[in-house]
Amino acid sequence: MIFRQLFEPISSTYTYLLGCEDTGQAVLIDPVIVCIERDLEEVRRLGLKLAYTVDTHIHADHITAALELKRMAGSKIAAPAFDRLPCTDVDIEEEKPLQVGNLTLQGLHTPGHTDGHFAYLLGDRLFTGDALLIEGCGRTDFQNGNADALYQSVREKLFTLPDETLVYPAHDYKDRFVSSIAQEKKRNPRLGGDKTLEDFKAIMANLNLPYPKFIDYAVPGNRQCGVCPADLPESLDQYCHQMTESPQG
Ligand SMILES: [Fe+2]
Image (cartoon, rainbow, N blue to C red; front, side, top):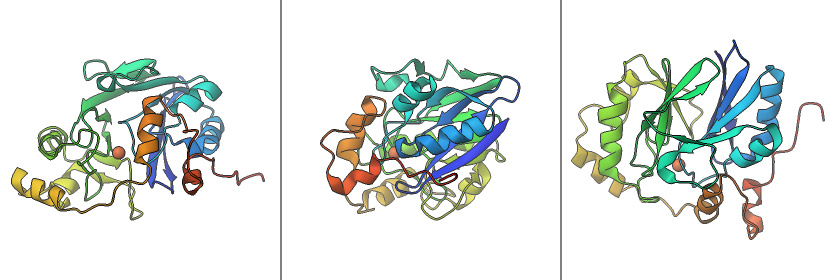
């Protein structure tokens, strides 16, 4: 398998490019609209054809590139069926793995950060979205988030995968790239070790996080599979305007 971990610095989002070496088919997990050119260039450089984009959930901190990539590269839009988006080509359910060439992406419904959130398992790699971050997890106070549900998703679903499973999160804010199920079971300060549901709920209830500054634009835009709002204030311009090309320029 061809594998690339790509980073978008404004929302600290990781996008993952997975390519089938036999067929040349590829999928991007959680692509970001401001990184379209960079991501497409990487797909081309590797001699791949972008067959699908797939999102882990309806993001609140960036706009997905799904719709623009469909226009530009002809990729199909896959997203959790739970969210009933009107713009998808493939609705992901646990019973229906996504086939990309010879790669099989198994969806795992992992509610708690959002109610429709899915993680994706491919062999020994687990793309955890915002359900499980490296020594952290996504917040649970918006988008039908629920700390009880997230505790259950992580402890009873993700933590039952083999210890050596690699954990690739949708974000990292401290320059870390990858973890493992064993490491998160041991070291995650919210969900690991002997943390009980009550401990976790107390932690999540006392985070005192600020209101997400892009959420009111990102969520409606992402419910349309990635549309930048027309009324975007100038202060949020960087969330919709593409990063300038560097390599040949
Ligand atoms: Fe999120």
